[in-house]
Image 1 (spheres, rainbow, N blue to C red):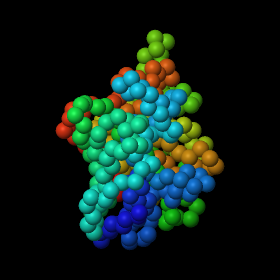
Image 2: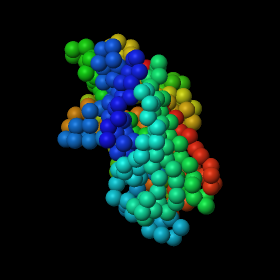
Image 3: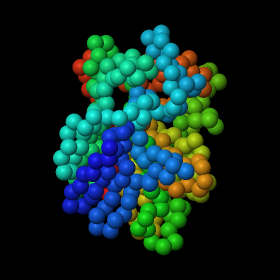
Image 4: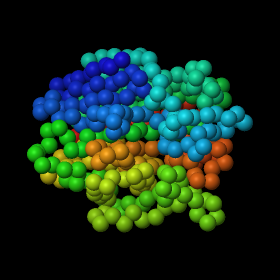
Length: 302
């Protein structure tokens, strides 16, 4: 079910399936900022990643001695319908809770609330994870927002290469070393994550190219409060909040020529190439005691 929210400046459409943004437009000129979700290229728009982010080696984890199987990366939240628990003109809140299906793959009771609210500067976006179980649990959470690039109202002749990904601090970027398949590489002692200088030509900037980013480029955050997509032709920028997130992935579609760029704040990282599959040994998990909550903010601003 698609739900539309709007204010004087913006209009957004969110699907209760996955609580996923489908569209975010500026009313004044009709600019669409979110990827269209063309299924021949990549059918998603901005999936929510829970209870883990990125790649799961072998398609399973062992949680409390139980084999928990996953047939897709990024967990299950993006593939399940959610309940609308609040709806106003410019705001909507969705909630996902445990079910027979989720308990098979993640044996905990939880509440995952996703709140969207349009404001003067764009879209406020908060995901709140609450432990409703009687025992502690660990999890990861993140987002996978695909920004249209070029945009529907860009000047004639605007190309992908007219855009750049910009990190707020403008410090030299640090990349997390991954295998060609997108798992976390280990050093000669079997330790991970390994990091290296990204060696970008201009500090804090990642140029977009027609070649794309294959399985993505994963960065340590460097305490940036935002990472943005800047159009160098008109100097406009769209920012996504990364405050408090230890990692940020940059990814583009791998089928055909790149048509969007994903900026993905993550709490957590992919499996290591030498994973034991044991959940509690997975890098970057957050732990919540019964009754505790954790907020992650991914506001989109212009």
